[in-house]
Image 1 (tube, rainbow, N blue to C red):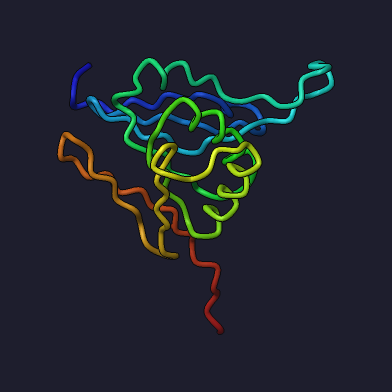
Image 2 (cartoon, helix red, strand yellow):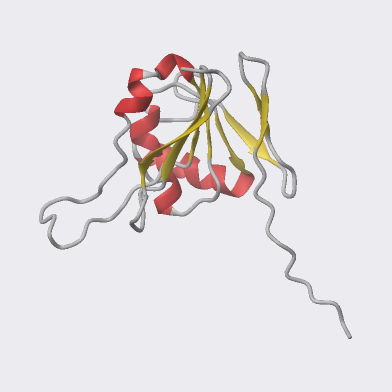
Length: 152
């Protein structure tokens, strides 16, 4: 794979509500943005939840550098127990999101530890940086646009 191209690999959530999960690949480095689940519609009788297809991540496990969580809704963190049972990678998110993640992993008896994942809390208003082996730093920002209106 050419090292100069950015590859976006949707693993779920494209064109549907829920199951948000996207792999972002640059050269030999992959970060995963969100790890959601989806609650099935009535046509999937007997199915409780639907999680993203992570076969791409499993096939490229040595390239996955971490998971960045944008926020703590189920459609963004709900699939994390299934991903972390297969991949031992760091997880990045805000303190609030990571508190929700810790509860979710406890539910599935997957405690946050060196065995499963290291978590890194991101301060409000700051952008995380993840250093990849290729010495490329990716900046991921999720700042809300200002909602303040000037008083006239």
